[in-house]
Image 1 (cartoon, helix red, strand yellow):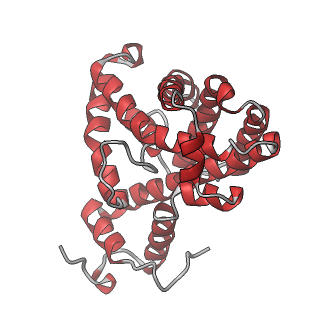
Image 2 (cartoon, rainbow, N blue to C red):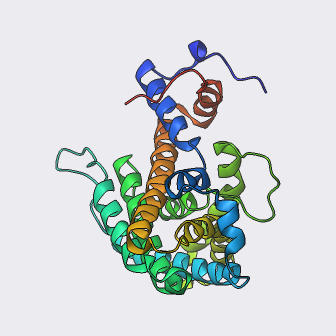
Image 3 (tube, rainbow, N blue to C red):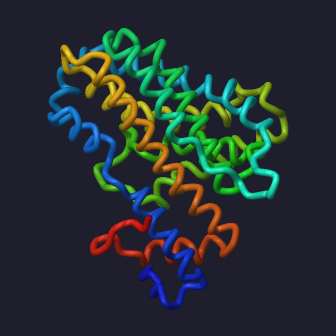
Length: 283
């Protein structure tokens, strides 16, 4: 379907600018490219050097990390007030979360893959809290089950699973791939509560997200595998890691905020009509 010209969009000029910036954040270079730029080596070669057992360890650690996100971050963040006394949401505390994740990366950097079962659940929970903080800043209700699961879904938007083909996935395609799983889990949790976190729909959602998220965890571990750099590289890699997902969260929840105002169809049409080839993100 050919996108409508931006001139025909119901979005205001200011909101089109905001949407353009969101698209820059959502269509930014893949995590592998960002990590390769700081380690100075293609990640494919580093991934090939990882032990054969690494994928199994990453998959297991990812599942544990995502389940801890549900059991800890959702419960604590969902009970917080999401706005200032004036009713305007505070800005997200991105730097605070980056510092915390850099600290865990420095602590685990010297131990590489051996530190994964300890570091990844902590790092992922901190990143998830940061994603929830971004969602709150864009007017989302953290007491809403759908919002909480949308925050979890952001961790699955930045990567592909082993069942995906080699095509590049746009934001709306990736979001659509997760939407049904999010919807089913949201409905089930709404009906039965978080005490059923092992239920079928929620388990399938976690598995779907984990399949995508584990790809990027593997890239993160590979980037940390360069010998002799240890804690310094661990902190740098973790900072890039959380920055990648903070950008995805800002883009995703900006789009959702605009959809609440203009409707999904209008925002998607404007998003598809925006070209990023000849301009830079608005600041």
